[in-house]
Length: 193
Image (cartoon, rainbow, N blue to C red):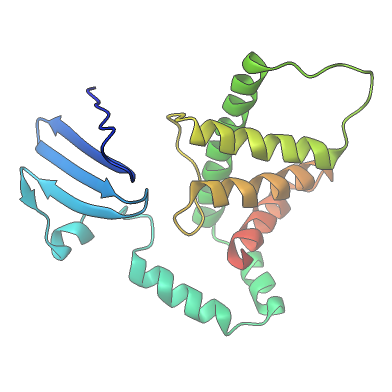
């Protein structure tokens, strides 16, 4: 791993190159973490057709996401809730894996924060709301501190994914809901967020 810092650049600029036995991949972000300005394979810019083959086959492409958003906007809240009751086994597994990722980065953030500061123990119990807030903060803190851990994103934002999933899952577990209802609650939160 090689990195440089250019103090003359005022905005975010990240250039990443990966070399494997299959070739060289290069990506450049400029002006923001979601502003990808260059994608290359073996020093040749990728065409839109080549980019579509890079999509995660299990995940939606951008056109599917837009179509889904348009469909959701036309639905009543009751219809959206009904969608969560029809989750497939694959949907549920995807939600469980995503929540596991977000839970892992929360625990990493809690570890990082505990190394930096100690909370005074005044013998007071912490409310569920305070615990949830601390966990959300820890997850976002770890992510923004460069923790190299996958997160379950929402609309392309890992922080939105953390802020949406952590309160819902923690409240559902606190209420001792069955796993199926936790999954449905997470699905609903992502659909309406």
